[in-house]
Length: 145
Image (tube, rainbow, N blue to C red; front, side, top):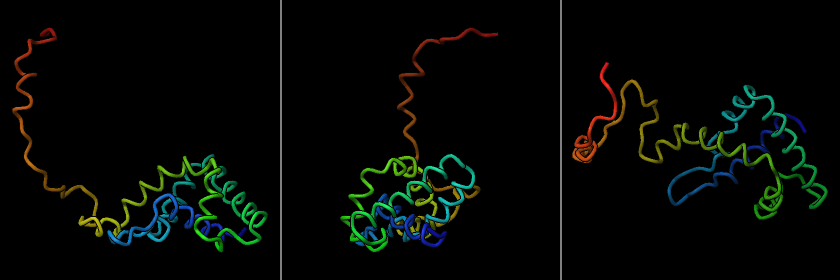
């Protein structure tokens, strides 16, 4: 399987981890381009790269053996059935979510500015500091000096 084919399969897998939500204006993770983020993570984590690369190859092999077609041509229900038994999906999920919520398209769909939180920060509601009163009334639990 070539790099382009592997990226297409990876994008479909990512769309299954975080599927599109058209009613909320949110793309799926594959559609949002999270595969590029995942590729950078895999470059930094060779053991995970091996696991994911083998998993994608297994998906392609299983798709052709069970359905006579490449994974990318399968209907969604058949893709989901093949993914249900794949161990590489679980460790890939964390990185999918991290990459997904960093994409400008997703941030904008959630009503956020597509920028890092610092140095500008975000407006926060004031805290109710009276919640600390019970702690403040407690005796000191440490010694001075």
